[in-house]
Amino acid sequence: MLSAKSFFSLDDFPQAEIFSEDGYVWDGLNNLKSYMDSYEYPKMLSTYLNLQGRPVEETLIFWHNQILCSCNTEITLGDTNKGGLTVVRNGKELEGASVIMAGAILLGNQIAIGEGVLIEGGATIKSPAIIGDCTEVRQGAYMRGYTLIGKRCVVGHTTEVKHSIFLNDAKAGHFNYLGDSILGNNANLGAGTKFANLRFLSGTVKIKTENEIIDTGRKKFGAILGDNAQTGCNSVTNPGTLLGPKSMLLPNVTAPSGFHPAQSVIKQ
Image (cartoon, one colour):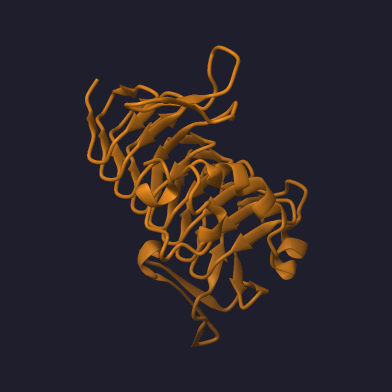
């Protein structure tokens, strides 16, 4: 009931092995640090962008593990999630090129960027970070480390993410906070959604189900949203909130911690 496969389809997720086949869904969080520490990051990107906190001075193109300047380049900012970001350099389209806009800050040497990724100016990305194909990291986004982002995702304006996983097509577009959390495929957060990840009282986070209470062993644990789950604007989840696939947390509502099965509608 609380396994990864009961929350997500992992068929097209590049890092599916981070989840235990028969364990709890939050094993993905338990495995995140070791997985990302051992990941092979592009050397050219890490060498060039280890700038000690200085913003990127000019827009850069990342293509075939090369860093290219944007001179003599035409960039079309179409729908990034649909492959609409195009880069033409000296009359030749650089298929799969990613764009790092001037003013972005990338810290550390463990950052991987897929194809067709857009990182806007004003975004801050701390190592380690893995960003999948056709993902958009918007102005003001703050990725605090150990962030694993799938394909066609959005890390939005003034959205803060730390030690969390986005599966493919997950979107946190506006003013969100995610700590120690997982978003399933095509999960969507309304503007202002916050995932609380630390209890007021000391101790580990426990998950209440219909039949039992399970100690996760985690002191910090935000929320897990199954595939196609969504939250309304200004909603909040308590530490250890699990929303099954196609569930909804309505606007201005605080979700109680514990397991909420598929297609739940949390109104108050």
